[in-house]
Image (tube, rainbow, N blue to C red):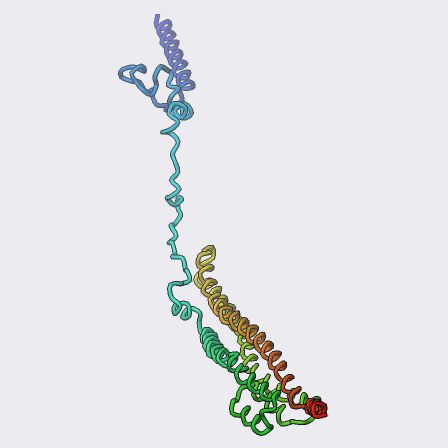
Length: 314
């Protein structure tokens, strides 16, 4: 009887041990108990009609609510761990005032401005000096030539009249009248010599115009190179790599001297070409009037007059 009871107890213990081992393998050691909803799975909105809880998976949640599940990225905010760089103001060339541009141009703007002042002064001087009425006064020229052709003036009166007038054409007439009664070739040579002196007076300061038109752009270019060197040095020291607005503004300021040099050089070259053409026209006109005087006072002309008088007398 006792042996049968012990055998029964051992059988019960073995069965209990086997059942506990199977429960540990299937559920896992220390696994949390399954969550139970108090009202049942049908009352949970996240589960819906799925009693097995499949909607709790991430893919199922994304498919169920795509707009709220995917976060949006705000481009106006900085990235995680990034820093917001300060927006540096754009360096622009001040164009509201000429004085501000001159101040920004630097030291080389001083000689460029000096060239512009000199250019303006001598342009007005040449405009006054090269007036046609001053170089070739028509009443004087017409009166002298007509009186010489009609033999109403002698040599001394004609020379005194030319010295009194003092114009460039009067200087040429005086050189011709001093050779009164000489051959035409000799008179022409005297006129050519006097014409060289007169031409040099008419073309005075032309080299100055040419020099200003050549030097002003070089001064502007030198100022631009100097300004660009300073701009690149400042960018390197300020660690402004990747900020093109600073580079563009600095180069724009550096180009002010080049623009100023061109603004001086272009009018200088135009004035040089204009006055050179005007002098050439005046020289051609003076040469024509001098030929009339030579024909009137040369030895050939006087011999022709004497022959015509003798023929008339005969």
